[in-house]
Length: 310
Image (cartoon, rainbow, N blue to C red; front, top):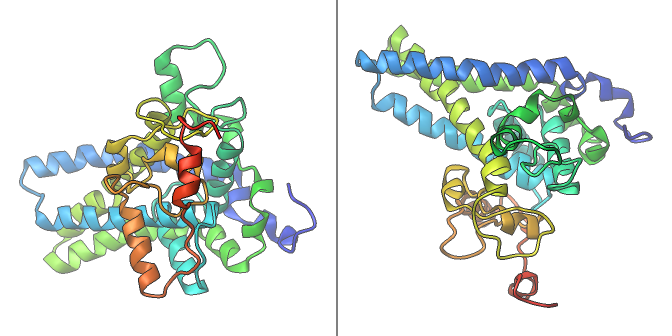
């Protein structure tokens, strides 16, 4: 653990330091959403699914999904742009609504991944050492790694975040934001339809099923994008660009691009590589909400191509 930082006396109070809390929260996000999907399918069979449920699902998926891709990943993990405190707070809260773990745990795990990508200490590589079947390695990289003790937070990777009181607050109140992300679609569904059934289906589709879909989209970057796709850039690992994951994971599927240029705010570096997170980042920049947006130059991209010798 990092010592001597201004946040050191307060570190034990953050959610990321409470390993059982992180594990049980993740387990809730893994076990309950599939059950909610089954319940939602049963209700849909009986005509309890309508346009409002679909809207709540998509809107909440985008809000919390961009909180992960733009917030937890491109801003907090890689500092791909600068943002004022209100924007930082919003990114931290919406990312927490995805229920993928507290901010310090998420970022430290991701930075650990980049430090040892597809090597022994990578927490979720499908190329980890060991004589196991392909399915075992895929399972490990997609979801199995969450159940292993080695995935506990490596807090030495986030001293910059721990030094900020606002981020310590967001981390320590992670469960509040995660629950809020489930309650918002439930309340909206109930108020718009003026019925308890509307609240229930809003909870199921905009809350729990949305978490399920979002989790697997993110986990697919860890698994699918280190197994299938093209790798035009030198990256010292097995990262791949995968167009399907690129769309479903809101631009994160252009993973070889990302590993070649980790601090780039843009992952879809070609015009045909759709990166919805980059679309939002571009809009935020034009509105003056963020500054100093980092993107590799054309010359730097050319130098990193695998068919180049330099």
